[in-house]
Image 1 (cartoon, one colour):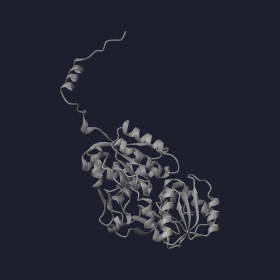
Image 2 (image 1 turned 135 degrees about the vertical axis):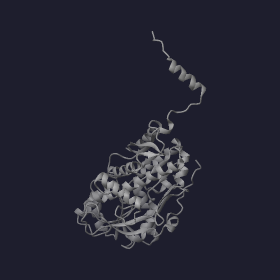
Image 3 (image 1 turned 180 degrees about the vertical axis):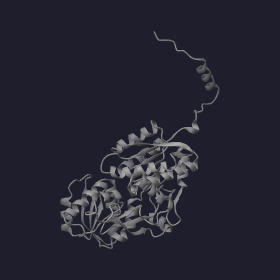
Image 4 (image 1 turned 45 degrees about the vertical axis):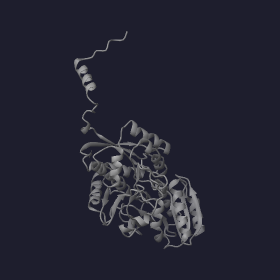
Length: 404
């Protein structure tokens, strides 16, 4: 027999009060705000996501772990596969009750997450992936993207690479990022009157590049145009050096990560690249210099570009929520669309038409002699040359932004 349910006088009074008044969540002003972090925890990309995550956590720590004057925390879930990333995104929203998500370490994951964001009605800020379609034909009102799209970086980089010559060998990964690089640069090379003398599409996590190095050596290109990510680039450059090719043919690639080059080591490192940020750039504004100092103090090493990417994306979200004074999705989105960062000479903002972060890129080359285990680069230029040229260089992304 079931024991009778006992209702105390206090409980009864509480129930009566609940019937008599509208529902008000207790202590709403003091509730902890939860932000989702969706980044891969394993695989070659994990060397980058560690920095992305650390930069994100630093952005919150610099605010005393508060947003809108309320306690805030980050909840980090994995991106094991595109499908797994979608499932974890749903868990973050439905179970962890996050009000926004930061992440998207690989383009394949980011595209899957982007497709999921409108259904969940959750603001998604992609802090790493560079596939053109993210802020192009796949754009939506809920998704923002920091990294400069592949096709834009290709246009920015083209004048530097053609200085080496117009006979190119393509070595690109067989997934969204690599194939986007191949398509973008082939179109530009054709327009410049250049020639493709070799074209290899390689699987992710390729362990042995020796056969490709031999093919490149035989083809004798002016430039090797790379499109392999993270640890794959490190593996290739090490084997390129071991086979005596360092210094023989220039290597060029967009969207280099500091961690990729640090993993290669000073003996094998080589190449010219685009990068969003470098910790020793004297043009960095004061808040970014402070970020670099705070990061160094916390981790005993300088911040990689990925740490800044995590930091600036999170900073824009937190400041936008402060401005919106709300955790409602559309209020956050509208505030992000009006957010401004950086300086007058080097401003940052989310373009309203496609939610692409508008910012200038660096062109960096590995130093001929490396004497500091962290300081690998010489800055060759900032592109475009002025902030006034940003819209023209980024151009029309092809985004048809839905109203909601």
